[in-house]
Length: 531
Image (cartoon, rainbow, N blue to C red; front, side, top):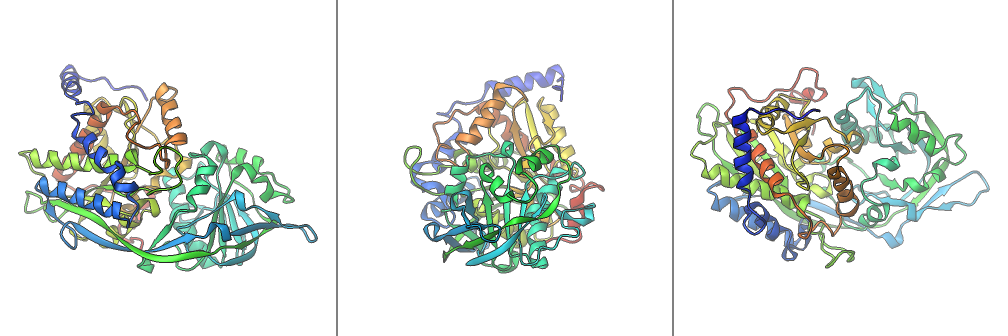
């Protein structure tokens, strides 16, 4: 997309704003990150002492900015979790093969999903179900004519051109778990195409040793019962397809072209034994409110969200062994606090109410926001929009943003109106096969029928910034290197915060609330929200 031309007056406004950008020693936004991503908070693992300390910090800042407590207990909404820790030294996973052939030990090629309640023993055939998409209401179903009862379903992340990125993402996150349980499948094994890998397999494998969580309120879980759930190293995936008449490389080529994939029963089966320890923990969503100034609209609320949790600590691989989560997502919470300051300082108050929500459990499966969306502490039934900030990556100049969810509702038009004035382009999602649409907290508001967006700063395609973007994912994403030493473009962060602030005010002041587009697949949830 070509860069927009600005009127001379707008150029002067942008230039003046850029000149005022502080450095790291004076930036309030960076100051919040320095606190939240410091060693004092020990990686902010949901339910840990470090997380509780971070929640207290955010609540104190909300109070300082004059925002009203809007949780169920002051600024806090308590969320309870069941914790599952896989005993990795007691896991055994083997591929069974043709009669008479010895099973193949694939322990090192499998990451057991700690966030899914696991079956202890699973011995079952493997069935390849293409992309694993069951969306007959959108005219696509990988399971037509495929019997998966008693089987472990294998799928390759992606989808056909006929489905949008958000539809593909929703199918895997929401529709697949329900379909597997209804169809009597006993497990699921996911694969990704090599070009879509964001972090090295070794780091993903290590993540399986971290505790997983599920909401204590069982009705809100994706899986209602135990299920063998795991990921398989794509570098070793040919072992899964041995004897099937298909090669994994052949399937990857089709997936990269977004062609339909074949469906077939594999010649291999799986024999898995998984042991886990269960415990419980609780953590807080932190909720503050700026009440609306218009009596006729104040009952309605615009939510600004970001997640406060990160991954805690682990075996040192970069310094002190702490997953600091500076960009993921201390940066987003810092933006919430910076916007809270702007809201407090502004003489013009929004017509609708604004809720600022720092949620827990995002890294464990978007759990804090799932709970809040199901049990809002304020304005239940009257939340008109969610604007989510998660790992927005101010690593390079802000010239383009990707607006996840922007094509689904009129919020996309609101974002465009704001970014146009700042000379920022909107790019289509370049990462459709990464399923970003369902990987952060705005998705839980979508599930409840609320128009929602998340903005990501994306570099100019083909630029040095794109190299920086890719390197950040390979070296810092969900790694201990996401710390305070990384280079940051403070001007980009300042502009991003301006976009979110202006967007929130625009939506809060509009005569009508955001509306779903008639052709949006997700518009149906306005009348029929998901559990």
